[in-house]
Image (cartoon, rainbow, N blue to C red; front, side, top):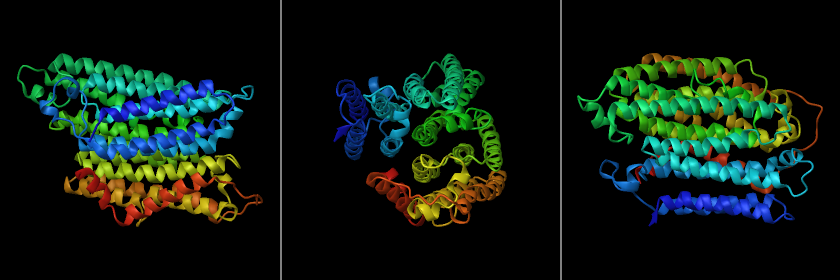
Length: 474
């Protein structure tokens, strides 16, 4: 068996090796580094199935008092590794855009760094899902965030990208301040930073539960920024549109998934308090309504997917209100498949035409394979039966019905109807709109294989979702 911390160490070492090779091997095609990183991550992903579980958090000491390798953590480590592999495949397709941002650099240095940074982000995400102490949560979160600071503004010659990077930097720094302030309040009220010991500390008559609750609210503000929940979502549309497309996909999937895992762990000691449930209920309701209604008039596909990300955060928050970890986990897996599928197609098509929905006009005649892949992505995001997105929404709504959250179910079902409208606008453009552009869209074999895998998995989990639940039980 393998010790869980070795996985993160392996990813960090891989990232440093990629940086060293990038620095000293100036004459190679830097896309080779992406293939090397994908291979390395695939080996770490395989090794993750042989991880030895950590001690029980309630009795852990020393290192294990702030790090856990429970089944949920191991599952989302694999989730982070798989997400990063697909993002790096997108990076290969996005390489011409990165190179054009460094026209005076004949060594393609920018591309090598663009490959290495997602590896450090992946290590941060893996640490984050194992963090059970507020101090370690903060450190892991900063490793992820600092990497994203650079990635979001990487193609710095583009003014839109610079704007996105600036907004992400300023607002993320603000959310970090809320996180630190909230941790200080919780520690001052309970004397604990370990999330598993907070329950007993809150039950202690000597602790100030109101001060701890205020600290939790500040922590929730910070995590609300990471998961793109209303009213902390203001950065999402501009950053998603301005960031390089693979980075947008990474933000949308990896950052959101880790944020929800941390949210589940942090909220667990506070869920018995009625104020917590009411607060999450209101945030979920606002996020559902805002995300879906704001997506309706969008004409830019990246911006539409940004508001879609907010809407899906609302559905996931329904699962948080009900505290159904299984439903949240399956929805996140479904969201990974359909979102990465959509961004993978967008990365390829946008370089030929653009990112507007109108740029997808007639895609079915130019590239039937990409059009079909985007069709599966869009109908799954909308929640059409026999797709992973439909099953994900079903489990979320089933949990809400079981918990008698009638208002959330009604609003959720109504907003799904909004989703059908704006997702199917893309399908309409691909299959019903004509175009004068008849040029074919080239695609490498690895991208075709990755997109095919995402399509198959999206349909397969829409028919047979049991493998995800079995994985959580192991």
